[in-house]
Length: 393
Image 1 (cartoon, rainbow, N blue to C red):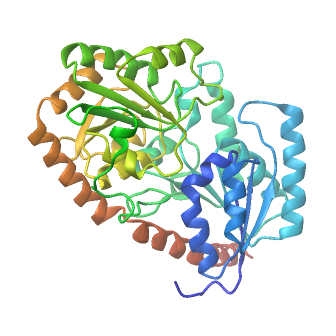
Image 2 (cartoon, helix red, strand yellow):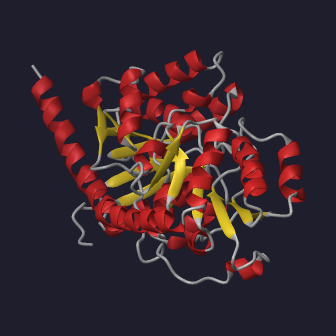
């Protein structure tokens, strides 16, 4: 990709290094386009891997997802110092804690271009008592940014409905998604993964990829699978992901339930999930909220029908009755019924999988999504400079 950024310094920040899994390609694209790229996140293996890529300035700053006033103050001061040292022309902070701390500090320092990438609304799945506080934090974060870049059409709609920011400040690039899909990596192909996990070759496999938490719908998925397995004993559930320690973590009883079920395989964290999709017959994502679920797009690119929910973000990842099915979040019976419909009809499942691959190829290729992102970064600073010029007396 040709260099056209003239080494403009840009700083991206996230709370957890796990988020870098979906940002790594964008960060590389910015570096390769000639930007001087800095990255802030909590320490972890994904930040270490990014540092090993070279050509980036890495800042490891511990941040907690939950409310922790003293720790938050310490992280805020460290981010403030990083901003003074790196002196970015553009900042792009995402995920709630990093965005709140990073954009507040950036506003105080009057960083020329301040972007908040909104990857979901945590308040949608929070307890009612916490929602006013989370809403206030979202509004403060957005107020400190010049632009709020929404990850999906429905997320932009929800941000508008909650008055997170004025509609003119809420932006969406093309059809959404922050990363797009590597179509060469995620495609239908043979795999021996079923053999490795002792799953019969003629079994019907439901798959889930992601964090094993409440808001990802794991309790409903396990209840639905009990019903599915009772109806179709040849079904298996492949859980690809890890038990997260966040505030929506699962009760330990769920881990015991998963471990004791003879037809549930839990892989733990998998760095490259491409072959996991190839071992599945259907991807199930019973999530309660999203920004735009990458796993749904990856599964679609792999030729799978996708069963997810009508939750924010998730409903943008399926063309209903064309590439998959949607059910209400939190409804295990509807989830089981929809899964059984697809599992019992191989022709419908395969037709949807083919349509899903074609749809993702057309609208969500990584090349297209990253090209749109680079154009946005190149143009947004000029747009803000022009706006500031119009505001001068």
